[in-house]
Length: 195
Image 1: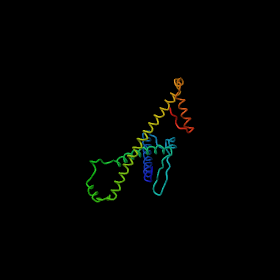
Image 2: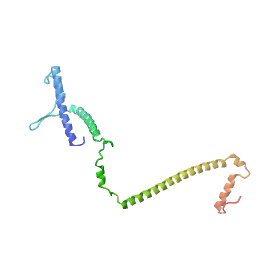
Image 3: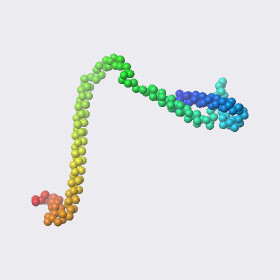
Image 4: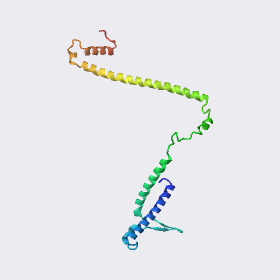
């Protein structure tokens, strides 16, 4: 329920619901042979309030029946709304489309884009294509850089494994001592040693 029209529809539904309920009650009384005055237990639950306005008498729905009536209304209203909204938004296929006015429409706009703007759009397109190629090249370089970094990590791990190997300690001049000597010379500023 979104607007005043929906409220009017709901009010009409409630009035119809009251009338249907009254008709059902009278059918029950006729089929059972009892009248409304004889069935005292039902008078408490089925008692409906009435409001007298100028010339109209309006029966109000009993509070015990409001929830049931509201649920029924919403079910009907939603199903009705779905069918109407689906019918309202059907898209025409190309075969169903009337294209008789297309030529007339486009003939009104022969120069929508003037030559100056067309050159501007062409330059923009060219610039964006160059930018796209630069971005693609950067993507390739980033991927290559990541691959080299991964390879570097693997080689560093392998070198560390070889440096800690038992065979390395058994050599007369272990490579680990040579590397440490080179690092010490570089930090002292002597430059790399000659071997």
